Amino acid sequence: MRDRPFAGIQTQSGFWFCGTGGLGDESSCGNGSFDLSNDVRKPTFNAFRFPFVAYADGSHVKIWGKRPGGVGNPIQIWRRKPSGKWNKVVTIDPGATFGKTFKSSWTKGFYQARIPVKGIRSVPFSLTRVGDKSVLPFGCLSTPTCDKNGRPN
Image (cartoon, rainbow, N blue to C red; front, side, top):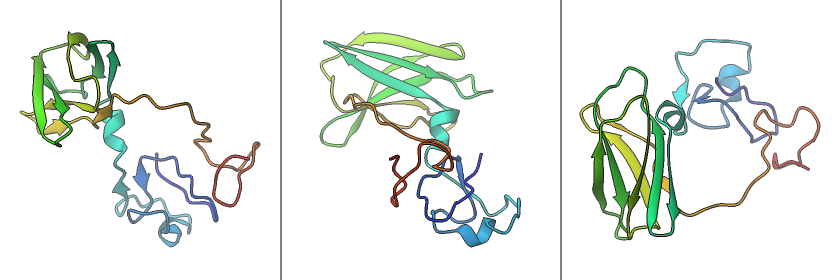
């Protein structure tokens, strides 16, 4: 999936920037070309390749993730302290999908899954819960419409 910029709309839904790594690159893909050689991977791409979530529940942290396809090495779970330093919490050797609950006094901040042998890291997941947000993942070309900033009306 790649962006296909629409004039005046900032919402883009692909995993790759069409051409350069920004939203102002309509000239590189607005000509009907499907040449992917200049596309740039978006930071969110890894969230789909190695999904990982962590939730605080009282004095426990619950994690869930899915190992990247074809990678069978042990997975390490790390947490980031307020100082910004990362510390390893536990190493697990799960199947394709993994989940674990562990007691922790660290119920704030970020957790991350890593497969160090392969140099693969999940996107860090914040334990701070956020509210729901209405999003039109494929832009505003249908109902509902969007305002001039690309937000749903």
